[in-house]
Image 1 (cartoon, rainbow, N blue to C red):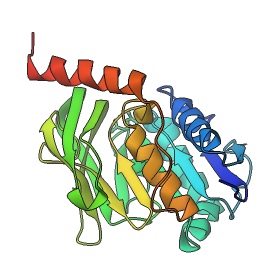
Image 2: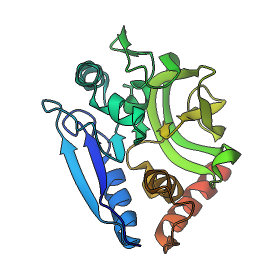
Image 3: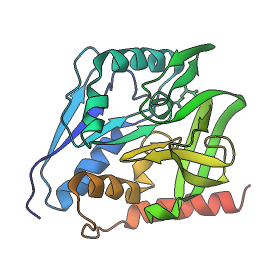
Image 4: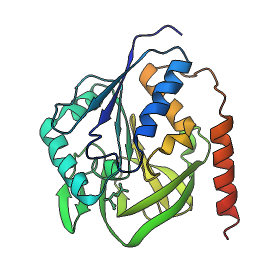
Length: 238
Ligand code: GLN
């Protein structure tokens, strides 16, 4: 493939990288490069302006304090919002997913979100910690989601978004659905380096960003093995 450079923006690694979220950036960059797509990686700390032109924005998980601060700074910045209005894709994980909505709770207080997708989050009766699996929305044509979750929030979806998956193991948004998608935005409770178990989601983002309907297949032996192990573990709980 010969293409223009794909610009990946990692949003606020100083605040939202608590759970190895950098892995998603590395996986996306690697899978693009293996298809001959040149990649530029832009890491933007929270005291710097976000570029308003890029192809994919990655926003990760975090504890309540950094999450609330990140939301304030992202609202004041406005760059990611402008980029999405111009067609950029977003992968948002856990705290990053919650803060794209209208509101979320952090340290007992209701916080304003970025209003980029029609979701709102509040607190659940207990923390959701453990394996997370689900059947992804068939319109996306992806294999089942496999991940690990660790969050206190529960998320409610408005009519303007679709659930990413129907939960088969774990809690996700509310025990029934997991994550959300709308346009080129994907949000998930699958923790940290979620793309390591879900390379098909990485390729979905790359297809959205490049406009290609298909990408050359890659050797996914290792992620397939990892997915298989985890799926078997949840099918046969100890
Ligand atoms: N602070 C949020 C919650 O507990 C998000 C946590 C996370 O990113 N893992 O719901």
